[in-house]
Image (cartoon, rainbow, N blue to C red; front, side, top):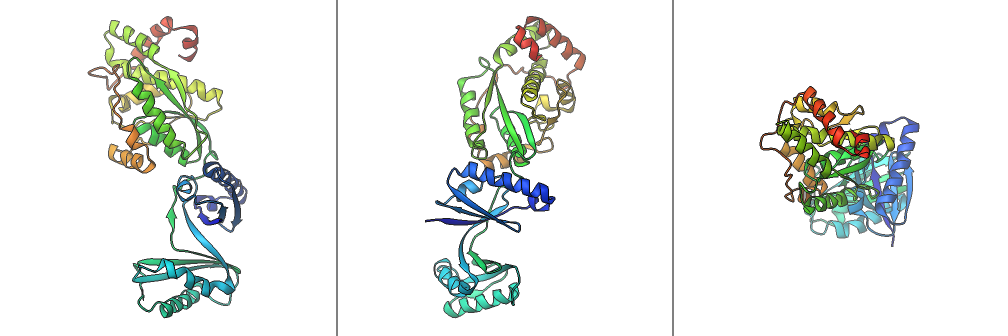
Length: 373
């Protein structure tokens, strides 16, 4: 048995012919990659028709660039009236009110409204217990007529939206596994970015649970990009030496700023090796001590590549709502502590002090670590 889907996109349609065709090809490539099943496509004036050997509703929900889709059935125009009545026998079984919505493309001797009224009258005649309700019907019957071809369906499933994955290039993302960074990563994926997620393993300042958490989050994100690969960086040794130097200087409050700057420097090195165009973080202004304006300014000075912060103006509730919607929240709330965090982290780090600390740190690091600092 084969299944037919009508796929709709929005932003792609607004692009120039050259960009639109390129993005359409990428969208089809991404659909194939996420579905993982044999499928065929047909593109026709702003619509994509997908034929598969199995139901793929849940997977289609995760394809960036798809604004909505509908499982549908096909018939020829001369068969439409009888076909719709047979379709309604099952679909209107428990309904009390209904509406018919027709969209038409091509040359016909009738308007869309004409066909809506005609089909509505036929349905009322066969199912006299029903009533028409054009405002809030129990069930809506949709018909798309394209020349002599007709597609009939009764649901419009909302997609994830955005633009096709990878059309905007590559970025590196700092992925901790907590609530914020997976959402920031997902939002950049939604805007067409191929993402290289980096996790900084800070053991012994945390437990094995932190690594388990980030791996679970990445598994969720792979439902949107099956080729997503997590890169793990050993960060514990650096933190240990940084804490030793900061304690000696009585600047323990600077550890979070020093830590984040180090992460950005490593991320920048990986980004340049990968031809990535920037670094993504889960920073939300004022949410924690390292994310004050003063500290963000000092932290940002650590690298020269652009730093993208898609959550910067969001509050925690907004971020959590997205995390729940995309499926990362339940894993991100797994409790994980960082024992390197001081009791009173600085909220107004001074760049000259940071540079002084890093200069001393450089002397105590291995040759490989110095290359990244």
